[in-house]
Length: 158
Image 1 (cartoon, rainbow, N blue to C red):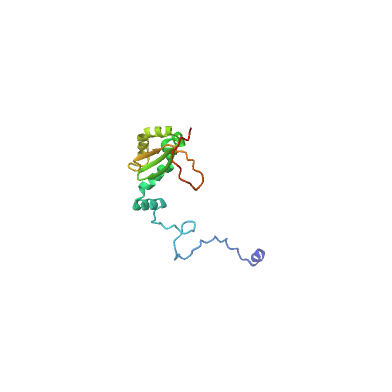
Image 2 (image 1 turned 120 degrees about the horizontal axis):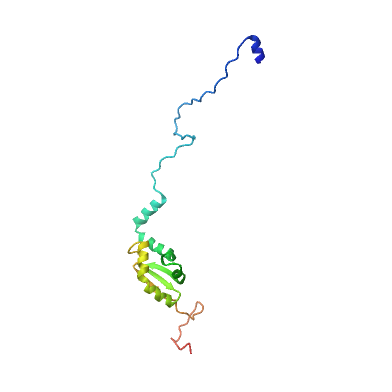
């Protein structure tokens, strides 16, 4: 084709530059540089903020703080004491604790003031105001679901 054009005496046109695409302005939503839609600025609180406002609105702060003490007992008193004690429940600002032995229960009763101070520092004042510390439960000779009342205490150890 080029030979035929030269024989006719026509000169070739200069190469065309690619034209920029001119598109009409969009009517829809504006897009970012990569063509995706822009994120709308949302005026929504985070889940944690919503949860915090709901907890404070319902007055659950003290209950949840008591639950934190229940869940993080080993962090509050240390692993050695936590190994020999069990937190049973939190009720009316009282923390009920059961110990492995009466010796641990006695030691914990002597440390009660320090434990309450640590709880007040970590959780806040007036969350836990009293510790109810119990030793191990007494043994039971009761077997099975049915029980007949006995004749009272006897000299069982002869």
